[in-house]
Image (cartoon, helix red, strand yellow):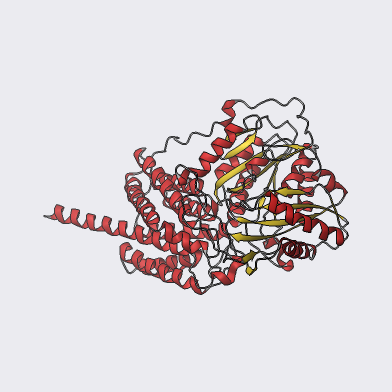
Length: 586
């Protein structure tokens, strides 16, 4: 259990502040994460890594010479927001391009992907290499669907060493891809992890049992087996990983026996003894092995075995020097002419930019939207625990917290925009940016995109009628569909969104907006409940598809909650207008 914190909601920020203070000689904070304390030399490729926190020393702990140039830090087990990725990448950029690398999770893919697009639009050569080392998360015929777990460390190290050796962006990308293609990992757990502020772990492993094939975000394993001895565990891990060796695998391998948080070094040493013997028996020579905590999962009890099938170039990069807060190998020489960053390099953009002029009709609609967002935030706070429980069945249990953080930030941003005289489009764009930045993850970026697209359709100048609202909602949902690359039936929030949009569009012509919204909300809630019968086809829950059946999708459920809250505000607004008109007639 995670016991030491102040405000659980600020755990990530507090931990990062302490980390930066402790390692000020090596790293500097920038909005969204950390970069090296020294500026990236001109002409050097910047390697930027990241993901949710809770995995220390991944990701911020390996920023330094010979490793990463910057790390983007999201909330616990949650993808960082696009704005944070951009902030770290721009701070780290040395003019020779930026290579992003991170584990293959939907939220990370979306947020880093959007950041990559924006960097390219600004003339920065930005590339991405996904880490897909987890052999338990998909079969050999679906390797690109696999998750990234402890193999992250390998790909980041090799890419960082290549950048330090003055490879160009093509070369850094090439060796990072090669490292990922030749890395295999399998993890096991003896007990689940607990998010700060929560009393129960994200999943339970019965006494005397072991979960096999878990993720690093608190996802349960794909099967449970009797608890083995250390040698039996070594047999299981080594045989599973070697079974996936590349066809051209040589005799030299890099190996990581990684502790997930609570399984400590002495236990790992006992397991390592069995691992090393079995690898030797199989004809492999181990190069620069690592045993310890490198990619953790808060307080999870468990470990993982990573094997990298080396070639000459990968071995040279794997063994190259590095100096970071959490990992040191050899003596990495300081870059020629390197000097410390200035304090002003960490200053973020002004979030209080002036709003443009807005029409009175749009400002009136914006006031209603602001009340609706406040109602959504209150509803998410009320249902936080329920949404977390739904998400923990086949995911990491953070959906409730993410929805609370995102909706609260959106409501605050909307209130600030209203005070500044914003119209509907500006208010929704700022609310969407705030939602995505605060929540991170998949739901954060999708809700942010939905609000922005809705605002773009409404505009800031024209009066807004019921037909405009319907078209704007449809546009927002279309943006989610395009960005998330999901379809109805995939067991995502779209399974509730699409029925909502269809019913709203069908009813709007024959009924008031209030009545049409109520009917659409009922359709969304019914569709969300029906997702219990579906098996997820994409996203973090897909590897645990069987476990997910019988539980509705948390994103679909939270969408239904949100639409009911908005409907209540629309109903109150309609009633208020009716009473006002009645008073005027009287």
